[in-house]
Image 1 (spheres, rainbow, N blue to C red):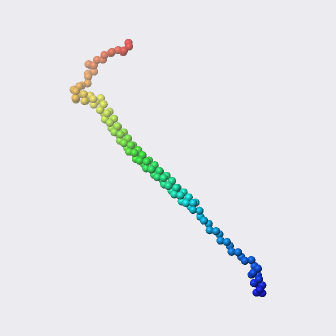
Image 2 (cartoon, rainbow, N blue to C red):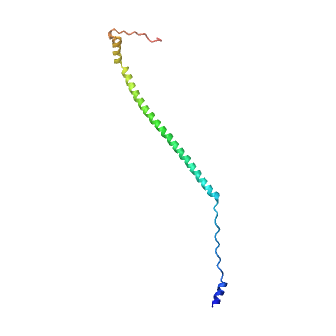
Image 3 (tube, one colour):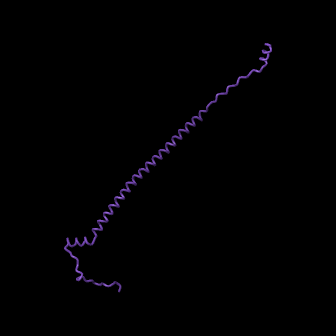
Length: 124
């Protein structure tokens, strides 16, 4: 019986060892391309963010200037109102009569002694 087992072992097909898969080589240029592309994107995003910040700073400066000009306009309008009031009171007929009487010694004319001259209309 032992001979039979030995013969079966000899005649039995021997299992072949599995071949090891060949090690994959990573292509270096693709990895380098990925890194270069990543750096390029970082630069592009940084430039865009810098532009956005510069734009926001410019808008902020314009808003500050607009606020200053609005305050100046409000002050000028108030000053114009004060000057208009002063002009109105200075041009009043009662004030002018008082100044004429005080400084120049003038008095209002008597209505009975007032005469009107009719010059006629030109072209008659």
